[in-house]
Length: 519
View 1 (tube, rainbow, N blue to C red):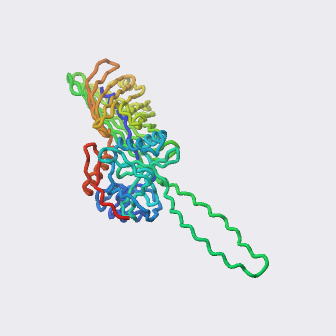
View 2: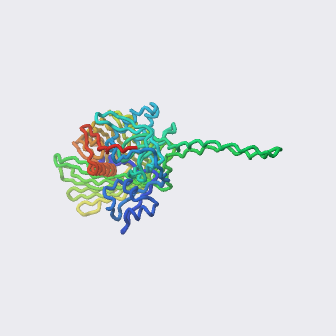
View 3: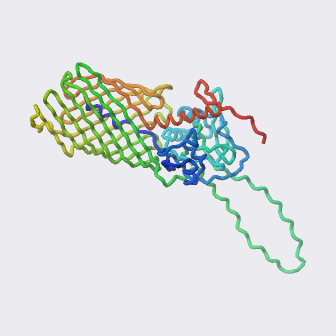
């Protein structure tokens, strides 16, 4: 039953890096001030942009994300909101963010559909809020859960007594710029700040008429001043290459039954260099997949083990319509060994072939709870070489039959069945064939946390070639997604500690607002 355990490797991807930013690795002796000076930034901006709890504590090897440099206009608007004291929505809550889009009366029905798809997919452009930005409708949640909007809002920048605010932006097809305030998850959209109109000058008094007769010289006609074009508030993408890392790992087991058992550990890692393109984000990089397995057969008298390692170039496309595609060309090595009594068999197979996975998350982007996301995956490999050996009672044997190997094929489907408030139900089916010796199938149902960082499942494994079935169970985790969520929640706890904020029963975070300042 070892072979079906390989089918999980193509299953999951992680959420990606941000376009328009550079990643700096801290070296010995550096602090935020030194790094900020190197990139012509403010150390306060880097601290807020990276969500650091203590701006003075960074270690060699830590990654520091550098936002795309923007021109900050140090203006004094008539009024601004300090998000450090505003009643925020709960950080990173997808459901509440989508509710704010639905409640926004300044967006059309088509714009709402497009906006929710973009926000659910992520991969927007990151930048910093500047003083010349005006946000058309900023949502806030009152204590009774009602979403209220403040219109034509400016956010206080450090030059205006606020703090550095990072934002993620998307451009709608209608031209509007959708904005997500990363510190609080408020979804709004932006209009460019327009300069206040200059007061009209009183006309100069007419000069006394020249008593000299004759024609008077006429002044040259002056061209009418042309209005300056409004700047595009969307942050310009950086020329750097933002990275999108992925890390997935887990285990599967068939518990001991009649002396037989099977265990497997599996991992997938990938790193992509990404860029924005038409309709989504593209990425090229490398993909690694590994499986390590062992077990007992024939009532415990026989034992097997081995590993399969694959590595190769890969391409990903993350659509703005909330579907993701991943294509790889993998070069791998499968090593297997078997022993029973005095018999020993061992073989190494070099493989090459394509792999593909497709994530369909349109229903989750629309906020639908049932069957919100489906993942399809497949891999095919053919042998470029086979090296086999057989010994019996320490004497070499005939390895001709053991050297036979046609191809390897595995495929499967994973469906998130139900998004509940505290968990997600999922189901999976997988198929594996290693011709001509093995053909298996497995079924799993399970539960994961609502962020889908880790999950557990149980089910049955079937030997389609020789007959038989066995009970199986396992677990999996999405490492990169877990890192992002933990960092966000830690930052939220620091905000609560520093501001005295409280949570309501529905999960809404409220920060005490200071007394209003007189104009």
